[in-house]
Amino acid sequence: MTNLIELPSVGCVVDITTQLTYPQFEDGKPDLNCPVALDECTTEWYDSLSAHDDAVVFAIRYIKW
Image: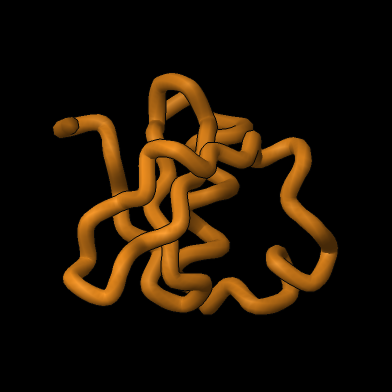
């Protein structure tokens, strides 16, 4: 899963190809059974992103990594 980038401020990873997020277990592994598309994430989720993680999400969504 080399397409996954960790977003520690919201406790998940995002797949740069599919733009799906996955929550992380305590050991850091993604829960691949619970995908949420970036377009479906809540305003609260976006508000919780750190500046760095927000820049990563912006790049994935608009610059097409």
